[in-house]
Length: 161
Image 1: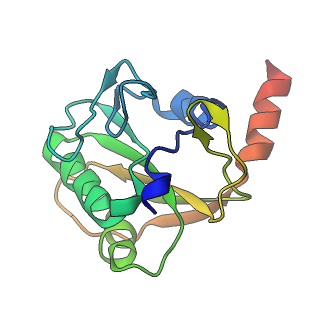
Image 2: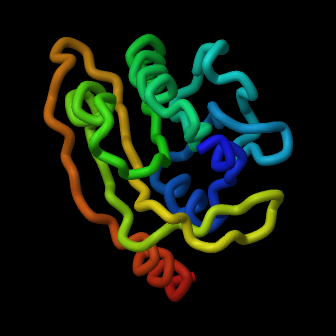
């Protein structure tokens, strides 16, 4: 999976999600592929101090990144939105995502990630957008899971513009 660590979020996908959430910080990027003005190139070491955080983490260490996203969301009382593979069998899915996320949006179709700014072919795996929101009090809640037809929504927004 280390080859997927440098895959960049396609701009149209990011723009659609950003229009909904209004991201202040990119928690997992390089200096060359940051999606927000405020960015962390070492998101596992630095605090995610922002209202709304975007995170398309390196896929080679997803359990660590997912746990970090939930911890930072609660510690900083913010919202964290992640784009990750929708492999639901790893332990972190049931123990962290399903137990603590507010939403899991399973994307219809495959994401065409970018590498070095160039369009790649579609990913070989399904993807999901996971939304963690700060929760005072009750820490465990079943995630609202649904299928999101991202392409249809992007076409509708393009028509409206």
